[in-house]
Image (cartoon, rainbow, N blue to C red; front, top):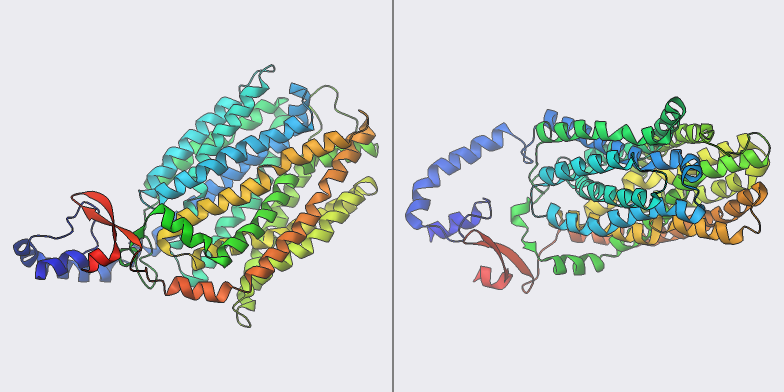
Length: 512
């Protein structure tokens, strides 16, 4: 009997037998107790010291920044790519769509693996693969546009391995207010990395006189990131820093996890709200620099691009706007949410809704004023992107506190699939095809006008996203409490170790 109690209480690896030998348990009881007590005194519950945790967040932020730099370097040199391959708006949109589709469909695979295996190793392999493929894409010859599409799709493999897992590591290092602050720092990398993608891409293109060199910057930094990930980051214990560590929460099957997420209104509605954010940001990320360039050609401020390299100053300015507005948006969103929590526990979804609803009119004005005033367009884009960026860290925090620790990577993966499937996976290609269909003739006027009309869709999608976040506010309190007080049902299958292998059995059989 004593042996059984010890084996159930000991949170060891999956290779530990479910029932241990009685004599062995009696012999190890005293040393284990002493070792456990010393361990609690020497290290925090997560197993990672506070200094190591800060270094870990720093490395994860650096990698996240590289991810978004690479993603939007292509957008920064898009006019050159269009001129080099001789492609229309629809094919240009495919560059982003192919990448997002690959990233989206592989996210559930890495989410499943991230909830069950060593997260640091998975991310390291994925980032190394992404760096090699990105470097290979920079050698695409002129008559092989399909090869550029293929390599951009393969880049999504590496990014999916990272984006689904990294936030869960931060969640296992910090709780409550500290978690929100660290997630805010982590998500600063999205606008900053995106902006640097435009800036670095356009400047390297200008200096080298060849857009291919713009794709050779992030691979080198990616290999440095793998080194830091392997030797600086330490894998924290899942859920241990929270009220109940992971070993007190039975691991359920993937199907059970998905059913539970589908019955979580706060998670589902916030995911649909974030989908609207992905639709708008994906559209603007690819098309805004090209749209600004066409507007300047239409107004006579710049000469059209006939033979490359093209003028990439609009990408440079848009990159600066993206960096500054992103920092302000993420910081202000987290701070407003923190202050508003004093008055209402529904602060997080309300701030997300306000940000989207305020961004819609400014984005509309930016698109309309492009034919009148370049300065006014940049001002309205800045305001629209600032409000749009208010929700990045908050949405991630909502997911982490309405989902139990053993399902977070799966939830991250599911949110990535939905937000990209209905958001930025199709929006660049969709708006490109709409632009092509609206173009009545091949002139500089209609190149600008058709893209302008298609981009107006973004304002209406932003309003729809705000409505989803308002609906999230109706359920957020209940779902937070359900996650905090989660208890599996008697017939819910869990995973227990059986001779070194994971076996799913009903909870009732374990209790018996």
